[in-house]
Amino acid sequence: MPITIPPLSKPMITSHQNTLIKKLRKLRQTKERRAQGLLLLEGTNLIEAAIQHGHILETFCYTEQWQTRHPQLWEQVVAQADRQEAVTPEVIESIATTVNPDGAIAAFAPTQLTLTPPDPLSLGLMVERLQDPGNLGTMIRTAAAAEAEGIWLSADSVDPQNPKVLRASAGAWFQMPIVGCGELGEAIASEVSKR
Image (cartoon, rainbow, N blue to C red; front, side):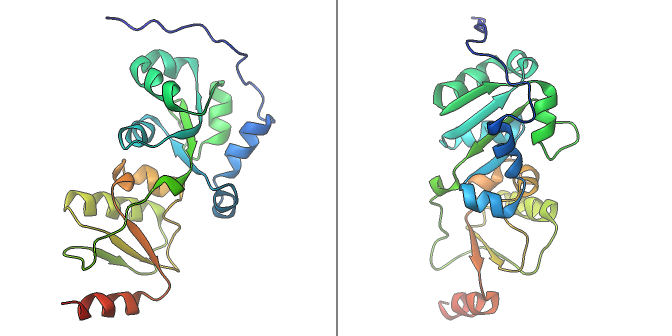
């Protein structure tokens, strides 16, 4: 049965200076993500992964073109997101960190994540001083495919909540526990001593 998309019930956001849009744009910075307690999800795949893992989106922005291309996902997201806003493609571009965003962006609170690695760990990944967000996202994806139980990340590594990390993880970020370690050597020694 085809899905009928209802007409917009409120005006579309067209201004880059809109308060909500400025707030979302700030989520590209680590200090703002921490201050607001929100993460930026860019694109259909990440938004779909968040929904599949039961996360509630605080804000969901989409273009009419995206809504037309993804009517079933749109219905799912709108049914559970706290706030939904139709925006112009130009507004999506002003928020996104990608060059060609696909028309959907959301913000959600990572405090909903309660994943913790088991203790002791059978298979895990320990990462030190990694600076490239794309590489961390790839490692998360690989660790999930290998059924690792968690990732330990040194404090001097890239922020695991960086939008580029989330994108590069292709949704695996939602299922892989990541623990920040002040002293990775101590974490390794602790794991070894449990053997």
